[in-house]
Length: 480
Image (cartoon, rainbow, N blue to C red; front, side, top):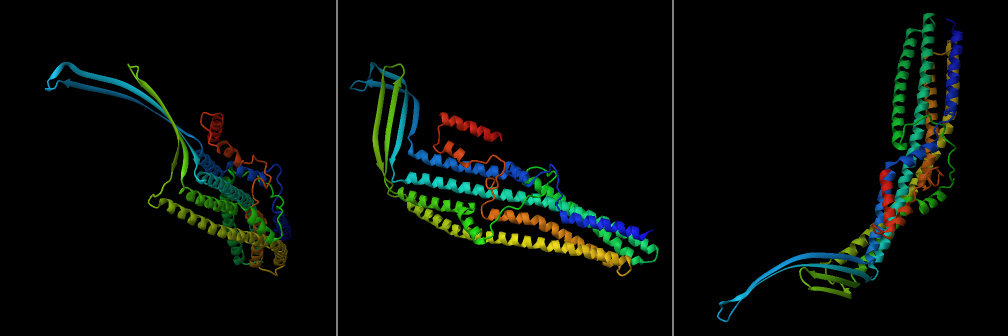
């Protein structure tokens, strides 16, 4: 066999493998983009749907709290059957003729009762404001969930790209080692190497097959995670776009995170709600003034007897003692306020630390990319040199195999670094509260958390115009 022709063919294969490792992400026309994956995650997330429902429940609490400031109207009705039998007698106690009487009447009555709270030292209004703060806290928590969903989509997208590239490298490595084994056998036949060199090449080829199987398994796992994160199987993925613009100042990033990170905003509203509940519980220890009114109608069947009555008046009352429950309620709300304040301190520190960690991860990823580029370049040159020297008898088969493994490791590290820098960059956006569909300008219908709130904040009656409109909205939500 002509060894020089074999060596030239092997060198062309090596050059192709190095070129493929340098490009890493081949352009695929019409392929799915990272933005498509983010849109899919936003539109298909069951976790987002779950927390939107939680927000709608919090919206309803505002209407429930406000209802205490509106009139309460009730009606009662009853139907009463009454009968009476009586016997009257003379002075001696002997019954007289015709003194037995029987009465049997059927009476119906209808009562309409209304009451309106006039003044309670602000107890109910404080409860309403606390419910509003809880709504704002829940909205912020929804944004935090949205950030987690989008970051998971980025990780899933880049994970599939990384797994595909590693499979490609492993396949190329398998081709190289197959040719290396063929070359070792040819050289063994002409007496240039020993049986040991052939065995080394065979062992390395078997290891390459095992590595390829592992990489293919990782790709299957990455695709499964993509389906969970995005809501559909990955198609042909295009290269990741340009990295998002990120401030170089960690201090500015921390200041931004403290101002707008949803986790901090949520706890701030929880603190405000706790303060309002303290004031509400204190006010409930004061007197209440309400307006009471009633209207009644009574009719007796088979009789002309009937009555109509009505009352209206002011009622003033105060709970003087309830086993200490009112005072305990005040202390409980004070303790919950203190707990939320402590939680706010913790969350602020956690967010600042997350910003530092995200920037450190991004800097590390950038350094790894630069180092891996130099490593790939040096490893490819070394591999080609060792291969040429082996052809001249100055290197052993083991030297060639070691050099090839070093090149594979360098290329794998480069692929990992190229994909992980995107996860690191988007982690910075999440840490500063900027990883939202609105901030990323995704082509989606942005969920409006105020739309449902505006429909229910005044607790519309079911048969009112607003109530019927709300019913249509709820039916539409149930169909989704």
